Length: 287
Image (cartoon, rainbow, N blue to C red; front, side):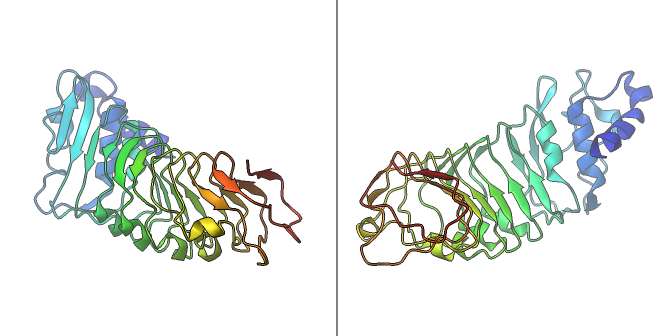
């Protein structure tokens, strides 16, 4: 449906441009349609077919910077804009390296900016996406620590920040997000201490922390795998630097609905848990 809308918008510009508008222009026009309030006219009065360069890139549009014939940056900071828009349209801007829209309230459920060239850190303003249910920013070049403001997205059910360059530790609070079902942070450079109590508190059913540099504190080395919350189906933390004993002698472990457990390529030792009453376990990797 979104592709159809983009196509219909493009037809309106054929006569004035002499050719179909570029994918970049269509994406920006689709975003423009979602703007509900633009007090200065910064976007609504500027983004039109009369101000497109000969190479097809709208560098004269306010807030737009081009590199050759492609949009390289969209900067719409502090303009008092409000919008009900799907930011995933920006994933069509294949050469986009900067996207900045501070203080713009958005109303949408799903945002995917995966597989682009975005770099830099996630701003704390991400907490303004109060209604979001799914956030996918995987396969970019994002870096810096994960902002604790992510934990204030109370309705978030799916969070995928994998295959970036995030560092430091996992912020406190992810384990208390009651709607979170999938947490995927694999393939980063997270190097903080991982507290195994996270697995007892989180309600997420799928957690992937593999391919990082996570370590255990002295206390956690005594008993890494105390248990996993009853609804968790998959936990992966292979290829980290976690060390210590898998379990602590004499303690009961709970593993509920576990289907996948991969702790391989760490520095763990000791006996395996008994996995009593775990009938659906399909993958078990610990060494």
